[in-house]
Amino acid sequence: MGAEEEVERECGSAVELGSPEEPKSPAVVVVVVLEKRRWVVLAVLCLLNASNSAVWLSMAPVTDHAAQFMAVKPDLINWLSLVYIVVCIPCGPLASWATDSFGLRFALVTGGLLNGVGALVRLLGVQDWMVTVLRGFPLVMTGQTVAALAQPLLLFAPTKVAAVWFPENQRAIANTIASMANPLGIMLTNVISPLIVHSAEQISTMLIVYAVPALLGTLLVICLMQRSAPLMPPSIGATTQSTQPFLINIKQLFTNGPFLILLVCFGTGIGAITCFTTLLAQILCARGYTDEFSGICGALTIAFGIVGAVITGMYVDRTKHFAQVGKINFLLASLAAIAFALLCVQRDQAVAVAFSCSLLGLFGFSIYSVCLEVGVECTYPVGEATSTGLLFVSGQIQALILILLLQALARPLSPADSVFVACKGSLMIPYDWTVSMLVFAGVCVLASSIFTLLFRAELRRRKAEEEYRHLHEPHEPLPATTSAHLDQTGIWEP
Image 1 (cartoon, rainbow, N blue to C red):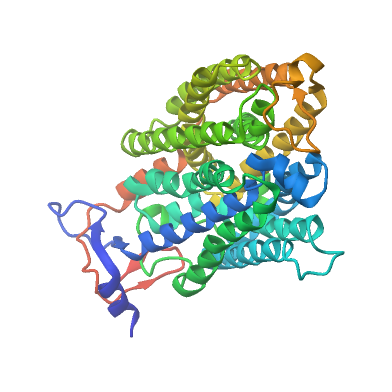
Image 2: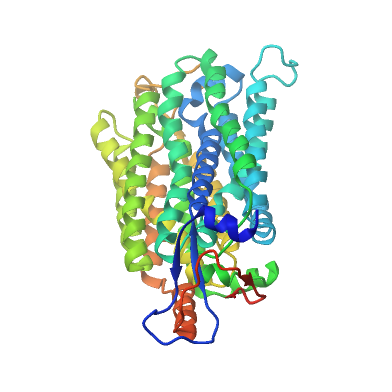
């Protein structure tokens, strides 16, 4: 089957760039073709990101039971989550380079394989027939590390998928959907893990549940991800992808003032959310809140975050007010962080704690995809995976620092307060997180204030597309099935 026939079979619509009422011009003709396959690519990426984040934080809501099952201290169970952060820091730049150099298919297939293998190895680690020296924590940590290698490849892909497969008026919402799949997986773990695990022996059942979607994602990405880009470009931006060397891209990013502010402040936001989801169950259990309630709070955070992200994604797709939306929601998220910090260290405040978690998710997660998109816009023509990757590496570095700092600031509960602890696993030592949470809130306020006051950015990609469109008007549209080729400048010619 020829390329033209495949385009005709797959494409949902062809959109011209130009005005059909104006006279014909012998200049170049650009045809935007939208393939239905773009939704398949987006769906596969969503499944991979959701299953990977589920593997990441599956132990966090049931830390006490997991520690008892594997006969280790709760601090080691925390490292099942922290290993994702540790791996992402050195591997993030490599994943960015690979995605921009070898394309989406390489990134998603490799990430899918690592994710599936990691989930399977974790499952093998809790089987009774496994060699004693490997059974339990050693093999579970090995599988967790393999799955962690997949995270940067999958987590950096949403902006690339949106830019390569979707038109201008769908990029933000496509990025939002793909980006929110990661917190969706976190939300599901906060609900599913406490529902499954009521005693240490049920940890193995939980690992089976999380291995199924990971393996399904591996199978689907191998079968359905047939190429990195559509046969014809969905937007002008997709025809002008950067081909400059990776090191030049990095140099441009570190000399871009607005991006550096975004790198620090948005990285703090990512770190704060990662810290929040990792330590939530331990923080709440010390004041008498059960694992089930912690799971509900985590689920409310993500659910409201997804709602907020979808609303803001559709709004910025239409208005392009990326920076304004990011600043307002960042400030509101910091206020919600203050409320949570004050409430989570008090007993019998379940409704107020749940409400503060919901607000933190609504405003905090809504800036997630917006900041990723504005990062691509203000650094154009640097590759999408490169700018996104650096933002996430900054977030993971700050998450690691923040988690270790908050754990260091936590103090053992007094004997009087210890009687109210809800998580009383044999190896669980309850802590007083009061000082830690005040520091957490202070970091959020500082980052949002700096971002609001200092961040100013030009939407370079949007400006370049407008200039390109204006330069080549007027044109007549080409039929979607017209024989065409792509020249070295990325412009479609008959």
